[in-house]
Length: 602
Ligand SMILES: [Zn+2]
Image (cartoon, rainbow, N blue to C red; front, top):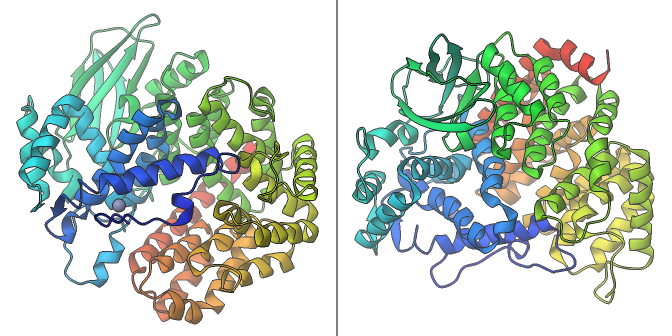
């Protein structure tokens, strides 16, 4: 919390231990610290005029945090991470019909809590990044300096910001206010449809709704940067799409054409069959050189698949596309691929394909896992370390025998030699990056024995990050009793701090069995939860686990439950979850066969 002169943090957002902190957590600490310090300018020095403009605080702090961390730790490539951690999650939430505009009227104190969400933070940051890229960073910086100087120790509105940004430099067409108006005032964002045609491209825009339902008629001013590749050279060009559609002349020959280069602008791209085919070939041939572009091609395709808005694009096309990433070695691309496969796994689990799906995952991950190996290599890029931290535990979780063995051996040594204690000074058998995943593998494979060992570590360690890792892992097994014990622990505030109660819950919903047990547990204990957490953000977090369901009957059950059980401050979240379950259910109905065939469950 960014109080002026007294910034406060949760311990896990501030404390780093060289030996026991996973790289991902270290980066998280850097991001959070930069965020709170950014508020000293955006929030404290210049304060939003009213809650409607909350994004001037949170959107900016969420953008500046990347700016600062990128300067401090360039090797982490955090602007690439921005696409996975901010840009895509914002597009996901904002694709719902139950989303809201960045600027919302706030008339009652109870409405304030609800807008501290990914729209104010992440969409806010994403549209700032889009504008900075469109204006040019230097022009944008000059305008921002003028804004901070003029409104120092005062309040400001969104329009004040746009006007000051024009001081930095005029736009070739129109004003910053007209360019940005619908990005902050309207809910959602467009999908840019693009296809090759004789002598150029046809472009179109339409409000994108992730459920495939009809959206509203808003037209945005859409900055389009596109790149053509002719087999030898690449050239980038720029245009601004204002109308619903436009035919664009393009005389240059190309073998590959890519739109929204670098995912700088906040929208999805839907390619027609011809351009899509060229891109698939381009990925295979290794000509899409920016990892962020490779990431975006599959992320956009997945959004289209999920929405079911194009009959020629189903889960089968997504699985086919994954094959083109066979030689991929960039962390950021894998991270996005795995997140999207995770949404397919929600369907696979609901359909009862969990086992076949795990087999598919092992086959998919094996080449990259072998390439990376278990041990870090001298002088390797930080992003390889990040990729290893994700891939190795994951292939073990899906049951890859050599990795499971290695993980269990390492865990045994780590436990037996008490390497989790402060007294231990040597090199740990279990690198901090792997611990979360290995703890899960241990509980899955060794059940109660591993569960008790983890509880022992939990009680012994004084390191908060370790405690959180354990809370998030102990519910990952298949044993009903252990799942029940994990869930019960979440509400036993002698064992688990109140502010940490969501971790055991989040760690349990990964399996179909765990998800169902968790939902039953939440329903049973809802009145106690309300008594303890009413008026906090916890209700939103707990309600969000229901979005992992993919069956119509679950949608009805969740709806019925919240109809008769109050959930103050989480009303919008519940509506969003119901919409997500509906989307999952329709997607599963459409693509059940395609998913079964792709993972070999047919
Ligand atoms: Zn903040």
